[in-house]
Length: 317
Image (tube, rainbow, N blue to C red; front, side, top):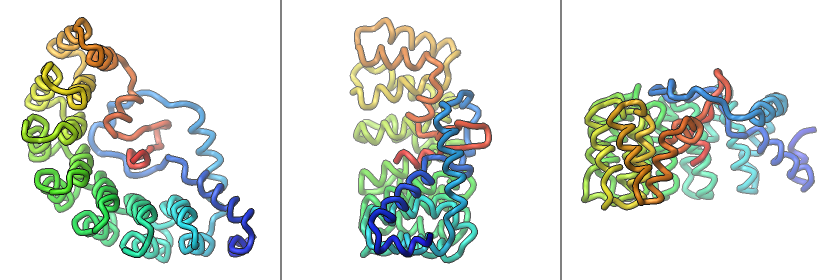
């Protein structure tokens, strides 16, 4: 059955959207962060296997012409769902790739659709043109939601591409729009192997001139850099500062989980557990746990339900 008939049949349109939603379950085989994947040593649950199997079967039935029609559907929700499927076709079909880039740039398009198109381009940001589209959207677009997603969609190339890394670092330091700035900070989490990046994030995290939400985002993005003594000491000071609000202090306490086993860190966590602040106590107990899935989710590192499978943190944004 050609999806063209869906224009005339509401039931067929509903089935088509449902099929695409199944295909677009939050899993993927590419885009894994380069920095610190060894932190993951657990599994999620069998539901992901069931979704993966069903999705693979359904995916094989979507051809280019049908997908192109759905990407031009009059219903914005259908276009969003089609974009979730397009990620698997863009590397093969130039027409699909061009259409997704067009949707991301089109100022007349619904913001929700443009945001999803930017997310979709994440999967091919190793290609020059899609990467340049994301950079242009991040720098200049009028819609905050589109800029936020465009910056986050660049996280996985920031370590290997100095132009992207420099753009993200500059935005983290000086972007005027707070939400967009925090998106750039978020996207730097996989680049903290670069000392300039970790240094910039540390400076933001410890600065009293910054608001707590921005400082907390910097702390989260420093999780993979906790092995650096200067980062670890800065985050520990935040975690131990009773004057610090929970919005900032709790992420700092959780971040100590990255360096459990060090006597100084374990001692600090024990002190927090014995302390009177209930929120800090609970966070310290969690930081002493082996809840790898929680920490990979909280610090937006992505998930690995299977050794050769990766769920991008962008799926949850």
